[in-house]
Image 1 (cartoon, rainbow, N blue to C red):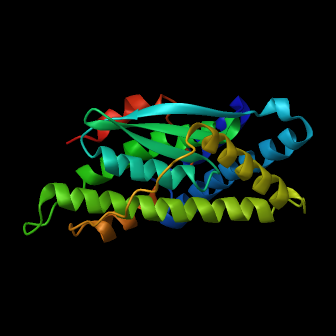
Image 2: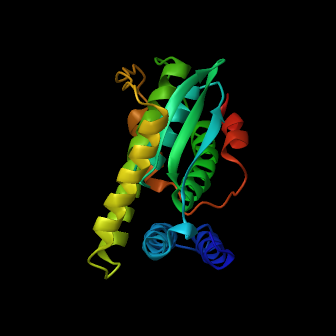
Image 3: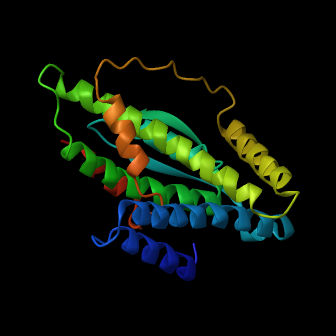
Length: 235
C-alpha cells in the first residue's frame, strides 16, 4: 500500500481515537478508513487488469501459534475470504501454518488487517471479564468466534460498497476472474484439499465478542508481521 494511502488511514484512525470525538464522529472516521482500504483493493485490481505485472498472484505462509491457535486461524479466514484470498490450514506443532493464496495487493491487505485485529482482539479479551459459571478457555474461544464473524461481515460489506462505488461496470467481472485465478493457484498446490468440519463451541462469549468486532478498527495501524503479532493473543 502506498505511503500516501497509509498516511490517510493513519490520520483517520488518529481522529477516531481522539477523546474529544463523539461516538458518532469516531464511527464516521473509522468507516472512512475502512472504505479507503476497500477502495485500494478495487483500484489495484483494475490496474492489474490493464497491466498484470503490477499485481501478480502469489502466496505466503503465516505461523499461527498457541494458545487459541485455531481461533486465530478463524479470524484470519474471516479477513482473507472477503478480500479474495484463500487459506489452507496445516498442523504445525501446537499451532498451524496457514498457507495464504491471493494477489499481492490483497495479501498485503490481509496481512495489514489481520495484524491489527489480533492486537485489538487481545485488548478486547483482556477487558472482558469471564462469567463465574463459564470456563475461561471456552468463553474466550466463543468470544473470538463472535469477533471473527462480525469482522468478516463488515469486510464483505465494505468490499461490496467499494465495487458499487467504483463507477466501472466491468469491475465485478475483473474481481470474479481474480478469485478464479486464486482458486486455480490453490488447486495446483492442493489438488486433494478437504474441508474441515464445523466447530462446536460451548462458551458464552460469542455475543460480547461480536459486539467488540462491531467496534473494531478496520484501517490497520500496525504494519509488523502477522506471525509475530499472533503470539500476543495468549493469556
